[in-house]
Length: 242
Ligand code: CA
Image (cartoon, rainbow, N blue to C red; front, side, top):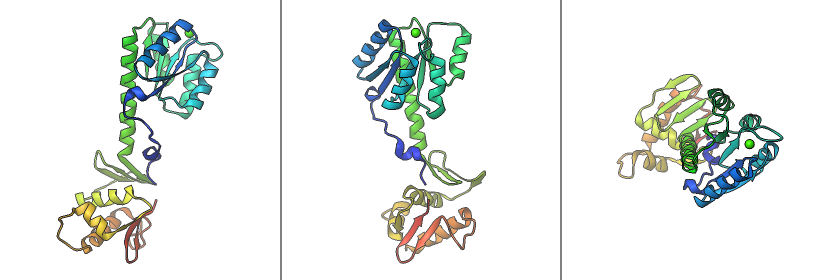
């Protein structure tokens, strides 16, 4: 199975395309922030109290939440905790209280950043963009990790682990495993694997693929003679079992 984030990632390219939920009870502040975000091309959803903020966060699935600390119905800290229970959505707290303690409380709650009122719109927009960027690069990292049960392959660090153990693979073994895991559940022919891993201009036989699969099995299968992960599809090639 590929890490669910691999498929779930539905982030659009330009940060300005993001949807932002603004939870703020003060009308002037809420409207000013909303206008500024819309001018920048963001789409904005607003809520005027904590409970409706929570409901809108769940209904509209925003890319980022701007959350005032002092709110009616449910305060910003409680809302932040509630959001964190089931999502890692980026949250920026807006606080009128500037003591260090408030900042610490805000961050312990799971907020990613905070802005102290009065703040400039420029500063707020910069924080929003920066957090969206960070959050997206985090998602991009997830896409570089292929996971199947206890077997994990990280394309960026080039590491493969099985449970707690690091598995040492040659370059070709690594690329072959990555190709198989990326297409988990699908049958890949020897010819296709040869082309993908060894390249179009590789002069050699498909037997090369069989040899590397055998080596891979010795490293990642519990019982290499009875492979559960890389399965042979007779007459065709191989399939990686999720
Ligand atoms: Ca308030």
